[in-house]
Amino acid sequence: MKATGIVRRIDDLGRVVIPKEIRRTLRIRVGDPLEIFTDREGGVIFKKYSPIGELGEYASKYAESLYKTSGRPVCITDKDTIIATAGAPKKELLEKPLSFDMEKIMEEKSGFVSKDGKKLKITDNNEKYTLGVVSPIISEGDTIGNVVIMDDGSNSQITDVEVKLAGVTSMFLGRQMEI
Image (tube, rainbow, N blue to C red; front, top):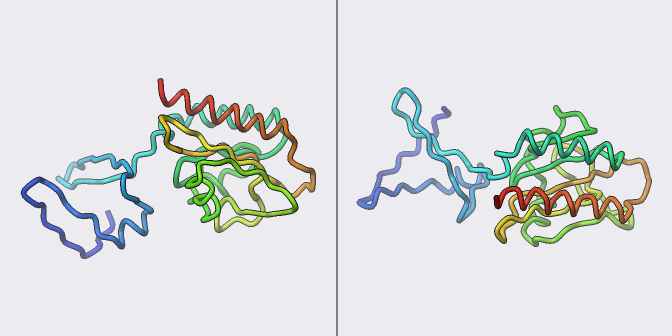
């Protein structure tokens, strides 16, 4: 565990405030679910809960199928990071934080299709892979992640078929979360 030097007291209702600096650094927003664990030394650990993270293995297989069908690199994200990828080096993308552009698309609960050469990054640290198609994974009315078909710089236009593939995949994953 990383020491922060910040001490907080528990109030009479059993609540503790997570400092703003930590919430900002870890991208914890109002309403975000947190998992609570204890360790062997008696420590309490708060971890951001990712409902779609439970589908990690399943999402990887779906990303691989989508990559084989579309021929373009694919990734599946939760609200903060990339949880599955196919057709692109896992070291470059897997578990990397999403870019500001991706967060903005998620907030709008709308999809995105790259047009007119508009290049938006998936992660802030990777220029090679940009957004081609983004389809939100919606479960119980909330965006819990995205299906992304990437633009790999091959200069081929995004097709309607790729848009529909991403849409079907995101709807399917969203429904799986509701079961």
